[in-house]
Amino acid sequence: MTLHSSFLSRLSALLVLAWLGASPLGSAFAAPAAETSPDVHAHHQQSARSLEDIEHSEFNHRVAGMGMLFMGLLALGMEAGIARRPNLHAMLWLWPAGWIVLGVFLFMRNDPHNWPWGPISLMDTLSAPDTLQHQIFTVVVMTIGTIEGLQVSGRLSGHRWRFFFPVLGIGSGLLLGLHAQVHALTPHVYLQHMVMAVLATSLGTCKLLRERGTLQGWYGSLLWPVLMMLLGAQLFFYVEH
Image (cartoon, rainbow, N blue to C red):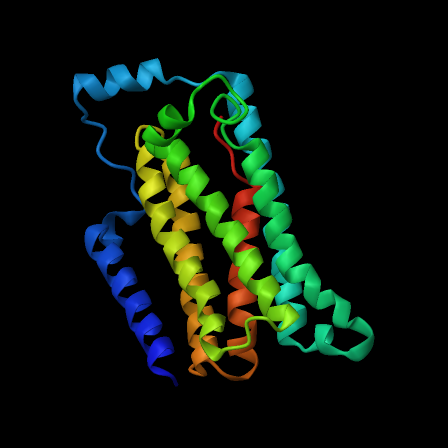
């Protein structure tokens, strides 16, 4: 194992431990206490979402869920070696292409009232925690697609590049845990985001262990694709009503 991969592995472990320390498992799946200040209630009332906005968000989550389910099936195919057969080698390009298509979809569909599609300026868009986090998720997805595509093309052939996907997956899970706080006053939405956070963090961790050779055998090859499909299922059945 190279020094670089060892550093990434330790960094990922520290990030997970730090997140678990900040959000103890005993309270991770329970929404924060309902006792909030009048200012929070006032802000919640001001930011009440219309039915159209809720349906727009649910549609985005469900399409993203179908994308993740598809990516999970691709991951299974890659782990099984199907995509590496000479007559099916083109399937390898579906992996980075899927991430890029998903990233473009998120960029075009996230927060339609904000920049660049709506009347809200870029600075105002980035100053709101929830919309900023949405943009970060989009950047992460596009980055995964770009790096994975460069690896398929052979332009990034170093061993260390294989660790970027699991590290970004773990980072996305931690960010989902923070993003859940935006929905603290709607317990069922908060719960769903926390489940996504745990699945994404577990997915990244299992993929990291797989790349390090810690997870071997059939269970090691199946674990992270199955977690990806479970994350896709959680996104597909996401509801805000």
